[in-house]
Length: 203
Image (cartoon, rainbow, N blue to C red; front, side):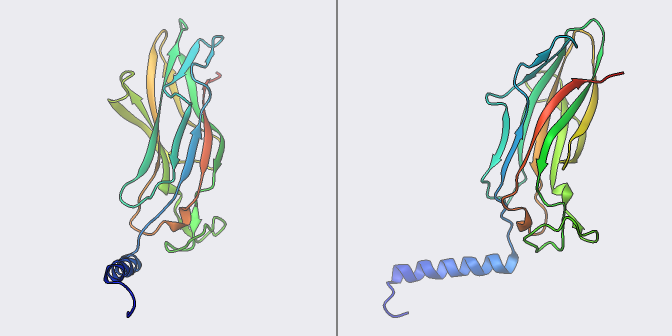
């Protein structure tokens, strides 16, 4: 290493050592650009007697450019549903206009690409999940898990709820990318999007 200053040689040695350790033990980097888009805050449909309010300035939930190594990556969307009717209302909490290109299946855990058409492939669809909580008030801190499932690849109803007459119920939706005990490089640069829609359930 003649001609390389001692300081630079030391830095080069450290970098090469780290590269060797990453190769030896494996690492998981998933750089996400994830957005859940919902309908506008304070939206309402007075004919149903249902008012929906989202607790967010720009009506989005985002996960962007995360270096995914140690923990799950998640974001929350808080919202309330108020009945102004004299009768209780049944509502559907729905995800619409869903676009989810996270891997559903891969050939193996070391793969760098999806193979969603492989019937015998490894199912990794549970690595991107949503959880819907019911909370006791608008602090959205004391909450009960209502349902948890894989984030869908198509539109679906995630929960049907009853809103008592002249009452408000509070909810929190969490979208998470779950850390697994294997490489997840196949989910680098993946995106998902969808609209959270609240509608009265027709009888």
